Length: 301
Ligand code: FES
Image (cartoon, rainbow, N blue to C red; front, side):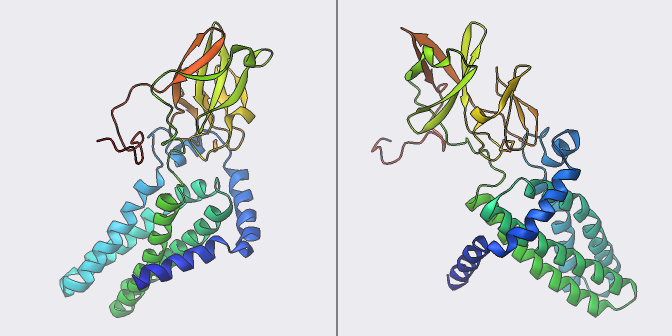
């Protein structure tokens, strides 16, 4: 518990470390200049997979390096060559993992960007340590190599903890609309006249911001919060049947919420709509009780 408290305090300090903003912002500007919204960005983001690619790719170097550690500890002299190969393989596999991480990080702001910067620096330190370990092993300096691998593993642990914080505490990489559910009964959203003279409008239904979009002969309702990092889509632009996010340029098909262009990986929620007596009503499609729809303190089973 003491360790957890120390870690929590440290991460809170990092979140407030505004001194990181200048250098981090400069690096982000360079990344965004070289990596605009488009096909390459989509591949690095994991748009076609439906989930971020970075968490998938990091398993390769981590697995290789941890396996090398086991061989160092328990494999004996005969396992030295295999351990060296694994250390080198991990360093190679770290390249795509680093590229995807940099792409994801470039879309963060504030505390997430600061934590992400330290997460990245820990990773670069780990990669450098493992590369030095591989070099030392190749030169026959096995003990030095093992020591450098141990240092790399320590840095990897710091980086992994910060990466977990980014995802599970700060929500980077998760669908920001995962818990934006509407009632399953028809609920009043706005008068039909709210769309007079405009193509879309954002309204609050309970606590959920809903984007109403005028289509030929119908009204479509989507979550107004971009699934990528939560931008208000009402500030974006409509065109070719898609809405483009104002922050990082993701495009979603208005009809079904499908991602047409990333960096978003998750589709927009589309709610059911109907017009009754000049009022637009919306509802969530029926869903079994799940983590998303579980009512809090309802007293029901
Ligand atoms: S918030 Fe990033 S694309 Fe919408």
